[in-house]
Length: 460
Ligand code: TYD
Ligand code: MG
Image 1: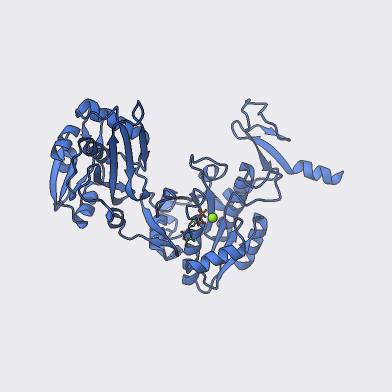
Image 2 (image 1 turned 120 degrees about the horizontal axis):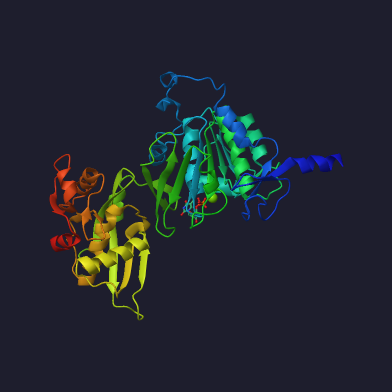
């Protein structure tokens, strides 16, 4: 009886939408009528709350100038330049970092390489890698294969987060990593591993450990294609840094981005190539991405994109063909399909280029995904080039946002884009008029400033 009582008092269920608390799980919140919103919680203050207390320890008011700065020396660098740059110079003591990405993209590979780098730099400390996805043997095999197996990198196959923390308190590692947060669970909750409640509570406990021991802690989280899945999304507000590892899965290139970083810029990206022996940094991504460009082929245009602060020259390929079946089909890889549809309409209505009834394929070479509007002009030019069967000069780059009226609008970082293009031997750039006026230095290549899409097509 007594035991039953303890069990009954262990968990409560809180509505995610309105905060209403029930003693047992229900499919629908009786207070706000929301379906599936009750989430299990430990009756005692959840770890997240305890961690909040740890952060505000003492709580005494202090002048902003009196607070010691986090200096570079405090950060733990992992010796992979591309990772450290995205982190803002390395891992900050006590920070909780979430590394998200689709299954199979290479998160565990990146993690073990980064952990090995840290272990080598801190030979007197241990680095703890808790894996819930693979056995110790599998993890060790991979680590050796990618040359990431120093003796002070300690592996443990454990999904019980409380046991991981006991081991971590004992080892006092320089860094703790948990792969993945979806497999982590605490016996304090009845929910199964992977449930929102477990993911949240486990992350809360890890955060408490990170903050109270000043140990940088890394969590791996799987994200599905639609960005869903219980886990990463519910953790984003909790953690200090959210990194995402992206690529198209088939292409060899991977991009590491910071979506949130309490200790650095979210403008940096890191570029990697997945090789037989793990992930290799790509220090000159533009040159790599352009290496296989076909010469003199219509539909190929190089755009100077700037994802983050880092300019990246990428080839956009378009193929416009007579429709295979009655109505035109549209396929876009690496760029937003809606954006392509919009540009097709603008091309047809404002630039006299009949592409609406055709089959249209747009692809970004190298499996890179581009999201900024500055690539609009490049997509439109590639489409027009393919539709008219006329190749674009191979030494010309393009950037600019295209508006619905067919106008070409200015974009940020024009100087950086032009500098990258010059570095790679391009001689001509088609850019928005408004950008030309604001250039800071001599671009070192011939500029064609355009105000309308039709003018850009003419210049090509
Ligand atoms: P992995 O790190 O296990 O992905 P995740 O943890 O994100 O699920 O890596 C997945 C893929 O990477 C795997 O399908 C094979 C490939 N890979 C290589 O090509 N080379 C390598 O050296 C390694 C370790 C993996
Ligand atoms: Mg993995």
